[in-house]
Image 1 (cartoon, helix red, strand yellow):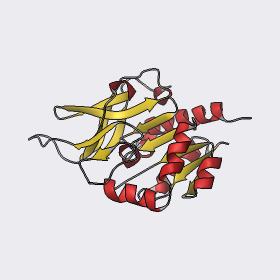
Image 2: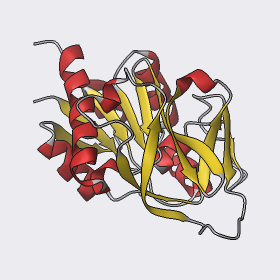
Image 3: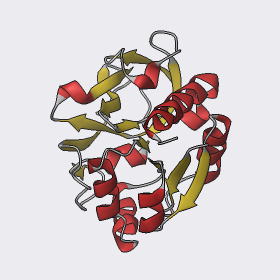
Image 4: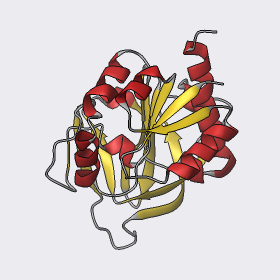
Length: 211
C-alpha cells in the first residue's frame, strides 16, 4: 500500500484523517520529519484552527520548504480545510504570511441576515472541474461537510475544482492543479462521499508510485 505522510503540526484531528486514508487503502504515517515527507509516496496536510498559529507551527518545525519542494517535485498532495488555506499568500484571519504556493488570499464570509458564521454542516458542491480525479465515481454536485468562517480566493479561477454557496456568497470549495489538490470541506467527516474522495486521491498516488 502507498505510504502517505500526514503532516503533524499540532493543528488537526489526525486520527480521523488517518482512519479515512486507511479505509481508502493507504498506509498513513503521521510525521513532522522533513525526511519522512521526502520518502513518502504522497502528503496530506490537514488542519483545524487559526491561520497564524498554523503557519507559525509549520515554520517552527522546518516544514515550509519541504512541503514546497514536495509539491514542486510532482508528489501527490492533498490539503484539507486549514491545510488548504495556508497554501495561500495571506489571510484576513491573521497577519502572518501564508506559504504562497497558490496566489490569492483567504477572506472572511460577509455577514448576512439569514446565514450563520461559521459555515457549518452539509452543503452541496458545484463541481467546476468535472474531469478532476477528486470527483471520480461520485454523483454530480455531491454533498460534503464544512466547518469554516474563511474561504480561499485564488487569483487564477481555473484552479477551482468546485464551489459552494452559503447565503448569497459562492466561494471556492476545492482546488486542483496537476499534483496539488486541496479542499475546504472535511472528507473524513463526509461519510461515503468523503471516503470516495480519499480513495480517488489514493488511486492517483498508486498510479505515480513505482511498482
